[in-house]
Length: 158
Image 1 (cartoon, rainbow, N blue to C red):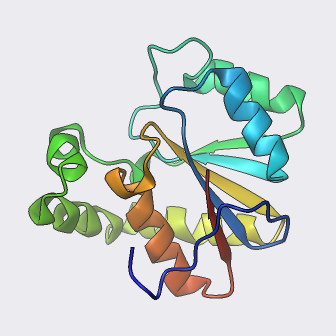
Image 2 (cartoon, rainbow, N blue to C red):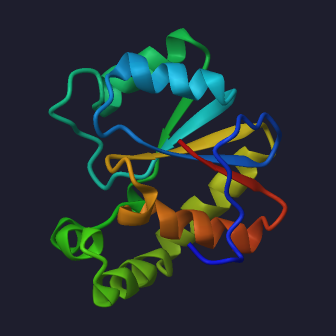
């Protein structure tokens, strides 16, 4: 993390708060509890394919569990990391990170990022993927890109 990053692990409840969260090592109950602790209004799923071998963490079941507690669910496939880019990305390869930044330059990803910025006006928004450590996950780059458009936003990594 660089000195210019805006991050915290404390509870922050405010409009314009991005909550970066991975479900690695969590149950759907753990995930929902953490989202509620952060007063998340909408979860944005940034997985290319919103499927999981973990019970309750695929798109339909997850969106149903979130609806029960009043959290919205949005899947933005355009923000997903291509499958063949994931291993290199997780290993920290600069080429994989550059490739993902190119993904975010697509028209579909630009529209998805603009939508997330709109959602931030309504309260805290969580960005979800698998990896627990945001630095190993493409959502770290998603957060950085969103911070360009919303430098006033707070970021919480849970």
